[in-house]
Length: 153
Image (cartoon, rainbow, N blue to C red; front, top):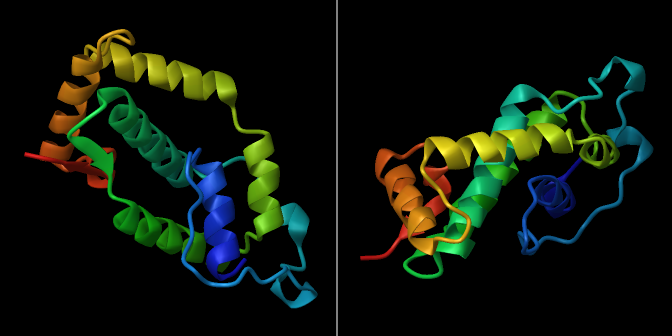
């Protein structure tokens, strides 16, 4: 897993609504990038990657639903995704591995975690102000979600 191709795949895994791009050409996977023992790799998303994916997904949701004054810091997001991609590569993951894991992402877990987040942060889906308030709290506290957010004055 290398460069922009890996970042783009990881970006898809994270539920990005816009493509993640570093401007680098996408290099196809080659036999030399494959780890010989494919069976030894986990078939589930590592917990730290799930947390990263959830944080980014929630940051994008908060920014989109707030409607104004809150956005996702795409430059920082790109940097964080590149770091995560490098970490996964060191662990032996390839783009194909990430795609396989993405296809088996526990949707029920994501939905339950989102519902719990909404409840614990007093977010009401039909109230944009509740998304804005949560986004401002997250950004101010520099949480996992907040690190992806840029809040205007």
